[in-house]
Amino acid sequence: MRDAVMLQEFLAEAWVDVAVFSLRPDYRAVLLAVDGLVPGASDEASEKLLQEAEASARAALDGRPVEELPHVAAWREAYKAFGAKPQRTRNSLEALLRRAASGLPRVNRLTDLYNAVSVLHQVPLGGEDLTGYAGAPRLIRATGGEPFDTVAGGAGVIEHPEPGEVVWGDDSGVTCRRWNWRQGRRTQLREETTAALFILDALHPMTDEALDAAADHLAARLHMLGPDVRVARRRLAAPTSAEGH
Image 1: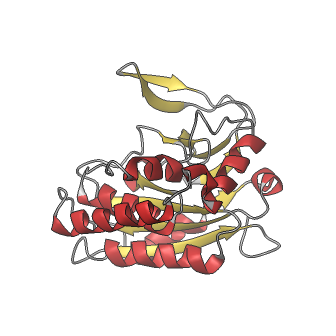
Image 2 (image 1 turned 90 degrees about the vertical axis):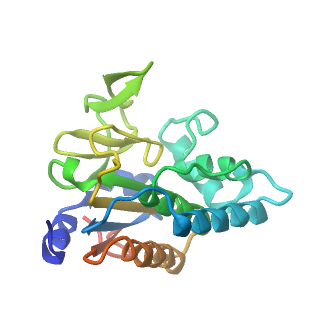
């Protein structure tokens, strides 16, 4: 079990390639490294939070399409900038918002929590199993040779990102393709996950204050998932505006 110092040391090694900031100088991320989580099935608390998120999405989308929400539109432009087609590969926020009208998925209380926070704060939010990481997380523009462990046609396969694609990864390869589109199997959250990494992605017009509010909400709810939960936190941003690498 990792203490708060170990979690902070892990986050201290995380970095964003300057090529990503060249693509989107307004990009910021808040990373939360967490340990001491007690796994559990969806429960009354997670159900209530999901219902709040669904109601929030319905209110936000009243009379307008998902792609016109300001943060969704910003992410669509970011996808186009590295060659992805946002109509085919939707960022995680847009994908969740499109499901909210008919009902967000009920998976387990940890996944339910971060999906709900993503929708409530309109921010792409990824969750990974910390025990699956090999080295520090980093956001780069891919060469095209990095391995990505995923599933296709019901079977496990190794794919590779497109050259120039923005991907999260570690020493062993890609952990999430197209910035915040699809996560890999190696670090995916599982029913037994007790340690996790959460990544909140922001572009203009989302403010630093709004990003911090989303991270605060997530951290507060994570502390409710066990008596000994520990949370470390770090912001990544372009060096000219804040902390960077």
